[in-house]
Image (cartoon, helix red, strand yellow):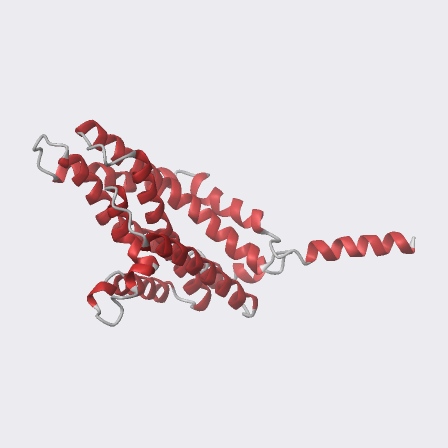
Length: 263
């Protein structure tokens, strides 16, 4: 009997110390919030306009350059709009639970800080990857193919460009989540996230930061267009690695901070 109790206690201890405890519960909760109702349809209609409006704004000259211009407009203007949209979607994901004291109730359950943060991040990453970026990017490419694309705009190059844009959006998502942990007001999260985005996207205009800009996550905004046209820059690899490392750092910091917070 004593031995059985020891085994049971050890098993419970392993479960209790799991650093990803509660990930699936948080992930499915957030996924159900967006995809369990009509919310995803509303979002899809909003973001699909990014793929429909650009062809209407470009003069029909009948050349293959028009197809390239559509994709260029989608990647460049779309990156700004989707980055802002990502921030707006994620701005209150943690703040609301703080204000309603839901966060206090959540952490009274068997839930780890890492499971909470990563569950939120993974769910919103799916929303952004499928609705905000995925579907519009597919429609934009199909529309450009119908209009006409040169051979240099291959599917592989375009997918690589979309992947770079996705990394940029995930970086903005991680910033919004971290700021949601640090602050208790949605306005502060939104304002600081947008300030970081707009100031960092213009690093090339600052002589002090211009030499390091090609190696940062913010270089992906213009690298995605160059990659789409077949002009892949060697520094793009470093920019992507920088993006992934930055996302990990932001999520680790958010996990560390929320683990030491009192609600």
